[in-house]
Image: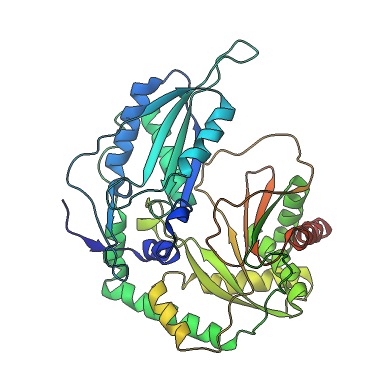
Length: 416
């Protein structure tokens, strides 16, 4: 067994969010994915590829000692991984249902690997050709964020195509923690704390009105639209910013109008994958960082530019110790809570792009799998074809949530 080490700052951020969850909510940090597999690989090949994947990435073998919740530790057992793989015979529908069921089972992070997999073998299709086999992959968020999950999928497919290609052990989260607590990393943490202090001291106390029918109730609405993606791209090109900044500008404007304020404190999710040694590290590196958006009622193009540069300045300070920030906030009782939160999910280059017919704009509602997170949280992503924006909101209600999403949608269409 390797020596226990502190958590990396991204792992610590996840732990900070989940440490006080009651037993009936301990499944909420789990994420599920369903991956199509190449035809004809077979269960033995998939099992061997998963074994190689676990040997390659230490995060898949990491255990956690959280007996002292104020000082959690991590270690990697010395024994080689032993991967078991159950197999089901079913179609696409069962794979999706199985993913939800497996994700609803919490992990014991001190005694279990933080992931599980199940092979679903494809059955016959109406054309007589067998459907592809699919792998249901479920993991705890402390093990991997969205970027790292795509790294795992990519490496698994590479190993299936060329067995033995995953040679050697990649850096793990304990290596990242060592760098973050080295002198250079500590200086970076100090700079991040100064960023928090400066932003919190200037931020207004703007917040969304409470419009929900049931106190504490969380609703989740999802906008899917091909036309809105075209609008976001047009705005991004005109403002010479990223699509993420264009989307954030439209979102912040809609929230600001409901807060009756032209300045908002926004929580922005920083991926923290901006340097080569850690870009494809399999772990969770995401952290919230504060952004102060001023003049939110400005024309959309200059607003997108302002959001873009403010966001870039913020993500420079995305790596921080959440416990130190919490202590800072406790010493600043006047510091407001963020009015909203935004996260545009980016995936590694080479991720498959969807090619399909246009999707007519629609807002649907679903029961949230997790209620961890900020009060008003928009999470956007695109597959090259359709824009998806999921809005999770507490104390808001469905009608105001839908109204906000449709205003965001219409703003993007007008920008096109």
